[in-house]
Image (cartoon, rainbow, N blue to C red; front, side, top):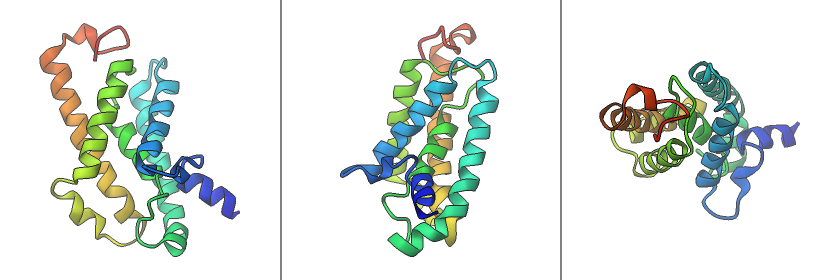
Length: 162
């Protein structure tokens, strides 16, 4: 049972990387998004994945904190949730979108602009997860701005640049 919990918390053990576990966890989100990219209902599936992973992360968070302290570095399912929010769009993401979304999400997740630091103070799993949800929302907003100001609507799907 502990192996299952550890596998969930570390998103398939990516959080056990010897350095930059949050970055490796986010790469798990990139792989998940890429796997869903060809689906016509990408927006629905990416948001469902984020919601399901949030619920699983919230459930396993007390166990993780009991073993690793407040928001242990190896707990990276929250990075995947945030990244799935970052790239949620009507059409599937392009490789460029995956890369730009990755960079934007990591930037917001690391710098933690307001109110992300406050969200971390919430006790339990929500405190671990909500700052990454906010980072995903911020990164999504920047991607949406790029898409709507730099691209035409016809370019927003897999055939477009971003």
